[in-house]
Structure formats: structure tokens, C-alpha cells
Image (cartoon, helix red, strand yellow):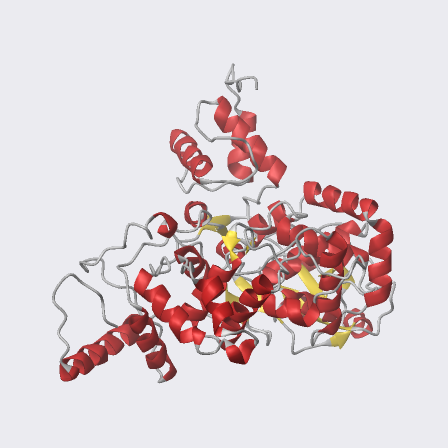
Length: 542
């Protein structure tokens, strides 16, 4: 890896090869191995929350290409550039490179992990005792330069005509393109992967999101019924995806979609990412998306149910019958497109079948599941029918007989996101279909649990393996008000635990002689509620 510096450049070929070889050796020694998620029933260690990513000196696009070629040849992922390198980010790139906003809070709120001290989930007895896990090493953030952008655009320009574009199309829509440091940082680990299961599910599948989803189902009921009948996907499933993806259209993202895909195509070296960059330009050229507001998530998904450009051309559907597809402004279009996606991908949706069913597992089966709360168990290679699981001794989460209204002939596998001492589920082909929409199992479980509640089924019954459970958004707002009332600057009580909220929690933990981890959980909320001062500061009237 070559670092750009202010010193004169030496173009000796022999020296260049020597430097590159030394860099590859150093990179191989410094790279960290990642623990892949298992689909074979083995334990998967979930990563602790990382600290905010440090910024590294700028690199040229040539450096990135050289590293990618070295990776193809068997080298490891490039190591972070040394902090002592003299090159600095250009002024124009600095504001964007301050890292994703969610990264800072995640570092402070290290999720608690559990010491096994209670009966397994198979007994229905809540687990207890949790300790804080150490923070993981922060991912490196590449700061792309103007040179990076131009070199990347020029490289991709060669493939424009093979992807349905003219060179003129490509030049027009990429003239002001930028590579995004925040997209690079987020690609190192999706936001939902940086927090514990109990924190993510508590705020993602809360009463507020359930009630909002029920309101959506009531408002667009006739259209939902038509879409459900046409694609054979349950209405609650479509609304649940809508709710988890964008909070029912409230949070579609603010990242420029074309820039996001250009960034991913240039820094992740995947053919699909390149195809999405080309498809993004096609969407702009054809007027399918608004040229001045083609925005979405950091990863390049857009619209109310977060489609990627290539999936749009393959699977988007006209749900309102007006002859065009608008995923930003037409909810029927967005829901029909999502239904078509679930129905046509490899794991096809089965109408009327739950995605997950919470179960109690007999001791002999529970023994095969690791007990540690950071041991995610996915037993997808041991698929049995619901009837066979019932014969093996499984009960529903409430202890009743395991049976489904749709029948017991469908196959399912055990899924224990936090080991044997937390909630355990049977996951069906519909869970797999959700994962084809978004590969995160946290996301998949959130959608599955939300759709269950939208259909009138209960939430999770077994306790998570922690003595400091996560908070719903309403509870986070309550915590923020408690802290504000005691004089802390937490900003608005918005239910989002940002840096100010976590700093205030640390200060309150210090005052109470508690570990100062900034964790936004039930323990600190209960402590504040039980120890109210004589007077709380009131917010000024608006």
C-alpha cells in the first residue's frame, strides 16, 4: 500500500515493487480475521460495539486498486494507515469524513453480556446477570480524494455502454460525483450489528411501531388486500418491512444514492456494486427518480421500502396502476414491489406461514446450543417439519402445544440469537425470504416479530440473557427527560440515544459510583425513576 505524502515521489520501478511487497506483508500481519455468521448450527460470536472510526491519511485510487489486486492474489484486507503519515485529508473531504453519526453512540453503549446464572430458555425462566463487553477495534475510514473520484469514474466509464448507457449519459450524471467516507465506514459493519440483540429489538419492535403499523394497515387496507392477493404475501409482512426499513416512510435516508454506489463500486470491488452504479445512472437518465433528491441509505437503497437500483429493474411493480413506478411517493408501488421481491427470490414467500415462532426447547436439544449470550446459533442444516419438532418435545413460547394454523407440514430450523439462555425460535422459509430482502438476521428477526404483533400474536416471552434490558423509544425519551430534568444537556427527547444522551448517562453513572459505560438501558432508567430530586428542571414552553 502506498501512502501519499508531501515528499517528492520516487518513480523507480524496483523500489516501487519493493515498497508494495513490504506493504502487502505488513498488511497480512495486521489484518484482523472476521468471524462469519454460521448457517450450519455452529456458534457465531457477535462483535462488541466498536468505537468511532478514526480517520486515516488520504490514498489514491491506484492504492485501492493495488490492494484489491493483492487481496485477489491471497493477501489479507489492508491494514489502517499509520497515524504518523504526513498526508492529510483535503479540506473539502473533512466535513463528510467525521464518521457516521450512529458510530459514536454505539461505542459508548457497550452491550452487556451475560454470565450464565439462570435456567435455559427452554424452561421459560428469565436469565440474569450481565457484564459489559470490551469495545472492538474501530474500522478504518478511507478518505477518498478528488483524484480517487476521477480515477474511479474513468475506470467505470469503460463499462457504460455494456450496461445500457451511453458515454454521454455517464459523463453527465457523474460530473459532480463524490466518494463518501461515511458509506465506506458503514460498510465495515452495519449499524444494527453494532449493538446487542436486546437493545436493537427493544427499540425497533416497540408499541409505537406496532401501533403505527396497524394505522397503516387500516389506512391502505383495500390496496393492501389487492396486493396481498396478487402476490400471495401477507399484508402484515409488507407493512412490517415498511416499518423496519424506513419507519413507515419517515426515514428514507439522506445519502446521495449514485454517490453511495460509486463509493461501494470503487472501494469494495464487487461486480454487483458496479452494476448498481450503472443502474443508478439509468434511473436518473430515464427520469424514474427525482434528479435533485435521489437519496436513500448509506448503502444505496432508496424509497419507502429501500430497493437497490438493480432490484428495481428486476422486481419493482406498479401497485397503483398509473403506468409508472414511484417508490418515493406511491405506497402501493412500494408495497407491491416488496411483495414481488419476496415472491420471486430463491426463498419464496409462503402465504399464511409465520417467519419465526418462539419455542421452548427440551434440555436434550438445548444442550446442543451454546449457552453464551454472544453465541448466535443458526441450525439451518437441521430442518424438520413443525410436527417433527413437536414430537421432539418443543413447545410454543407460552408452553402450549406446538402447532400452526397453516398446518404442521412446513419445515423449520432452530435459531437462537443469544444462545440457549435467551429466546429461541423456529425459523421457516419465510424467515429466509426476509433475509433475501436484507441479509442481516437482526433485521430479519425484527421484521418477523413486528409482523407477528401486527397479526395479533404476542411479542417475545422469554427474557434476554442480561440484567440490563434495552429500552423502547418511549422509554429512551423518558430517560432523556429524566436527565434533562437533572440539568444535563441532552437536546430534544427524541428517543434516539445520541452522544449527548450517552455523555449524560456517563456523568450520572459517575455520580452514582457505577461503571461509566454510557449504556442506555433499563438499569439507569430505573435508578433515575426511583431517586427523583425534589424538583426537576422543566423545558421552556414552545
